[in-house]
Length: 266
Image 1 (cartoon, one colour):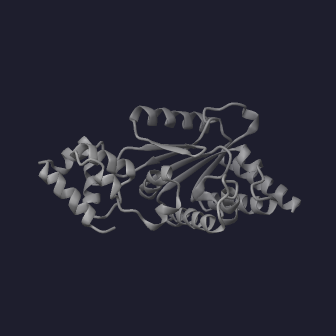
Image 2 (image 1 turned 120 degrees about the vertical axis):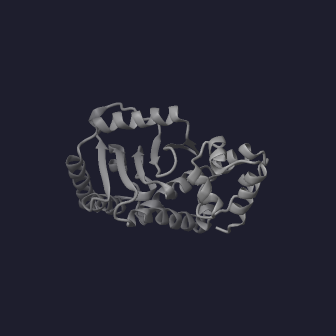
């Protein structure tokens, strides 16, 4: 991003007589995170910018003039902060309630998911969103970081999003990721009945230089949670559900068998 934003932030901080650490404390961030923003190495999330505005009494300036990457324009407003955090995360734990989490989707599966939006998206809008979703998946091109775990409700496997051909390819993609040790995948079987994550999809993220956060999403609404109390509660719910899930080997066997069922239906 242009460093004009970071330089203006530094100027406002110095005018206020604050060190980077003091500003970080006031904005509930880490000093290194503030340093990265000032140096132009990191784009602040909308929530970051809002807290910086509050700490510096700069009204809404830092939030309104926050630099946006081109792909940011192709996501829902409520997902912008989560998208930026996803790029920075060193560990991501996903829970899929009804469909495969975005960073694990194939192109055909993503198109089918986006095709269910209401009101319907234009072809151009869907293309832009698909491109953004595939760019998000590039975090998996690194052999190590971020570490990604995916916990999937069995409904994700059974719902034929896009039809048998699309589903078979999507499930085979998940198996390949797991077999290459890039993603660890566990399935919550129907036979379990209720579990702590039944109400919402959930993403948990950890970082090198800032506290962990959680992201939840429903219909036309999403929220980043950075309150330690809320994040710890959601981490606990995830851990409890993971403890009831099938082991990795059994999960992959179920995914392979389900993929074969779809292939037989083609």
